[in-house]
Amino acid sequence: MTEHQQDKIKESIPARPQKLGLKLLERKSHVGTDIVSFKFSRSEDNNNYYLNYKAGQYAVVDLGTKEDPEGPIRSFTLASSPTEENIILISTRIRDTPFKKKLDSLDVGISVKLTAPLGKFVLHEDHSRAAVFLSGGIGVTPFRSMIKYATDKQLPVKIILFDANRNQDNILYKKEFDECANSNKNLKIAYTLDVPDNDWKGERGYINQTMVRKYLSTTEMDNSIFYICGPPGMLNAIKNLLQVDLSIPKERIKIEEFTGY
Image 1: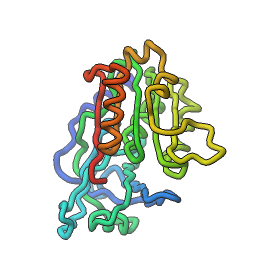
Image 2: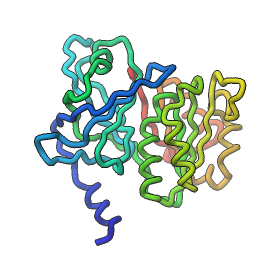
Image 3: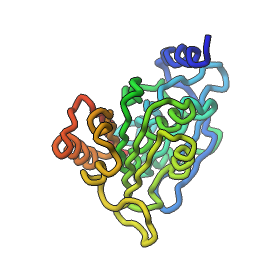
Image 4: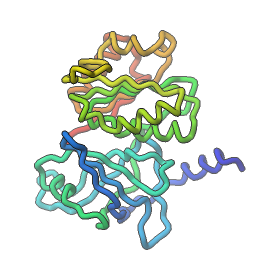
């Protein structure tokens, strides 16, 4: 049995439905932003269950915050890749809610309850079609998972990422994306900023028709699968851009909405 066949079998094993207690290994604040990243262990200490998931999926975190009017749970994309064997990574903006305050105050070593992974916002299997990722702010998290996975597995799929942010500080995972681009000839990244510094050499402003056409060939425009992830306002604007301005049929558009993050 080849390594690829073994991976396919491993990835097809259904995740257990119950919650798992995963230990917090690391907490990192991103300077100049309200974003914090959390790395958890990928398995419980007292059993051998290995959290299995597909790149781009999400899990539900339960902190038991009964005082939060929105409840004790939140959904978070697993920004880590299945190829990262020992960690689960989530990144989020810290808001003034009981849930987010408790999450931000967690001590390294504490165990947190996560559900088995969910969601269908995953990379398509027809690698002859390019994947075009369009993200706004923290919406880039599932694309970090997919890009890392495709790079580590050397998948023969072309990926073009359009990553829109307010300023350079808010470009989450830029170092990791640039490292992937250096080793993955199939990966191309276009960063664009609303408020760029004077020395910024990337794109400026919102993702628009001119910008998309600049990076995509006619063949890519006609055959790619488009993935959108971000807050509702950004998502609706990009959906309108693709369907109205660029005439992309809705069957080639996948959407993941971030609400209340």
